[in-house]
Length: 260
Ligand SMILES: C[S@@+](CC[C@H](N)C(=O)[O-])C[C@H]1O[C@@H](n2cnc3c(N)ncnc32)[C@H](O)[C@@H]1O
Image (tube, rainbow, N blue to C red):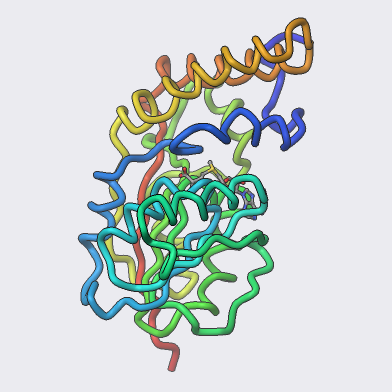
């Protein structure tokens, strides 16, 4: 198989977990952008219950916790990520109000209208932007906020190579304007959208991941699956440097509207 034809969906999730487990983040982002997204929320001091969905090992969760007073529950389906998440909470002395649980973003173990804020960085595409916005809204109080990062097109037209790559990875991928309209249709007041800078992908994700890829190859010498997986990761990073003007992660922030 040519590297270009291999998709991330061809690999076992445990391999994806193993590659990402030692990284500070499991996807593009930065503390600065997490704090910037928080700056669009009113009454930060009144936020008492927060869910961070697809939290990974909690890179962004610890930043959230250092900037708001509320209790945060992180949810991720990889138990190994949640173990590290809870170790990180202890390391930052946040264990009294930050707790990670193993669970599915599409089947949340929470009460209706339990949260003031639902956060999700780099994870919403796993269950679908529109589906998640609709489903998660039930768990938000009226006037509660949602803040998510999501892969988005910056232009209406793209070169075929990058179009194919992302439509395969995230079939629903669309433009920022379209995504804002989905958010509004789902019953949120649109608050803000902003693009994550390049550094969030390169310095904070691809560069540390490259070191983890090397370590994985060293751990499994001659393993064809691991080699193909690492080639797939390298291909993704190469495409980013070639086509970054066409797509990126966008933070979308919305507020749940009262239904009358
Ligand atoms: C790209 S990573 C982002 C992790 C973290 N939020 C960050 O930005 O560093 C996506 C996360 O979503 C989790 N995930 C994917 N599908 C999930 C699902 N259906 N339910 C819960 N977690 C899921 C993965 O285990 C992974 O930790």
